[in-house]
Image 1 (tube, helix red, strand yellow):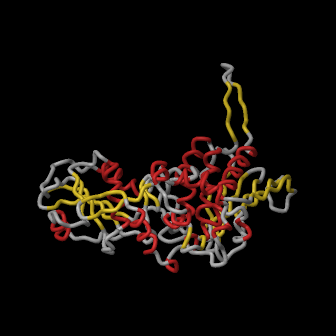
Image 2 (tube, rainbow, N blue to C red):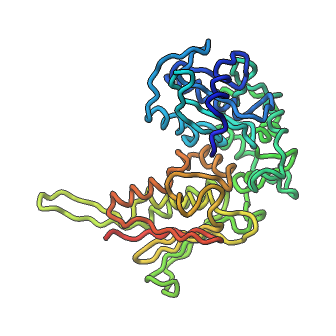
Image 3 (cartoon, one colour):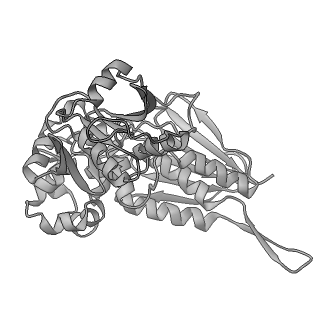
Length: 397
């Protein structure tokens, strides 16, 4: 992303004490307040349609605080984008600048195309110099600002669906308590449809495709390819005998939970006893790596325009995971797997995070690589095609 400000415009903005697009912090000690500001600028309640800026290293009166802007500080600020505390993921850039002889860290936050944005389950907005929690009416304004036609597929309304197509008992007893801060739920007297709209699960009175995938008792009735097929094959070729076949269907949480259990069930562990009678256990595949790669496939696959499932072929010498849909957005063959992220299904990613299946965005593949290396497995091999992405994981050398 190109940095949108020159030094001159940044310096003028940093000294504008009246602007509600600016926040000044003498240091980065209070990360909680910085995240609240990032959330508020992403929501852009005044509808400036311009980025907001957080200056680290400037006092409230616009003078320099004199802190050292280290590379570690810049990384820490940049990590706020992907650490899962702010949902949906904000679009931000972080740079070190010298403004009028003052060294500062500049965090530029773009207005979100999918408000309301939440920090730890709460919607924050900035009115004048004050950052505060949004009122229900302000949340509704933010939700109504979205234009369904501009949204990703999982956030678009499924025209033939109605709210009764969702498992509303599951929504109220399971999903909402894990996605919205408890004190917000306790104080919230709005009808359930209003709450679902604020979470991008309804457009008007119509469920979104992401809501049907995650909250419908039967997602396959709406998305025929939304399941995981796993084959356990007795050999190294697809034509070899099939030992077992699994078809994982149901709500998103059910599929992910069963998928994790199934991966663990199929891992085999070799036990060696050393000369000192110490037992050494080595699995043929580390569970964490397989879970990260399989859950990544669920999060990033294409759900529209295809009836293909996610396919997991477990051979005697390797595991292949194939996800429908090629690379998306700013992710390219050159930066794939380096932590660069873009989201074909941002609502699905948000729901997976809320349900506890995605702790840190952008780290799935790097974490899988690390776990495989520590277990003695070769690096994963990725096949990047226009219609799908396949990852192959091989047994330890």
